[in-house]
Amino acid sequence: MKTKDAEKLKVFFSAVYAFGVWTTIGSLLYLRYMGRFEDIRDNPYRVVYETAHTKTVIVYKKDFVPYTTRLFNFFNSFTGNK
Image 1: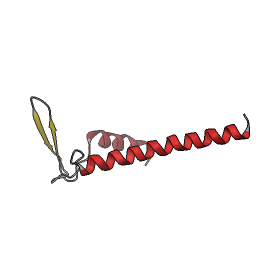
Image 2 (image 1 turned 90 degrees about the vertical axis):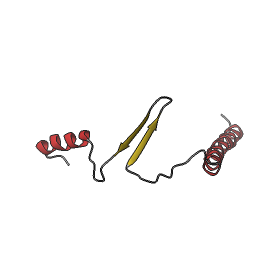
Image 3 (image 1 turned 180 degrees about the vertical axis):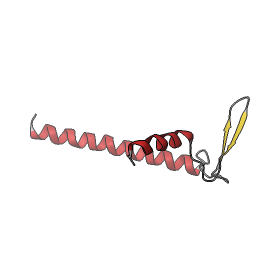
């Protein structure tokens, strides 16, 4: 590959990368400010799952530790890994 071809390829890939980055940033800003991307919750410990037929509300305790983490810590206590 010649030097000029490599430079053209570099410029092309830089333009493709820049287009992708700006498209991602633009869509994120568009969705946030148009109201379709809402991440503000009144209670961070309350999760609501809605489907067409059901609505499930899960309220976690403030210092909740999942059972998988508890089991992982329990088994690691025998081996001494932290």
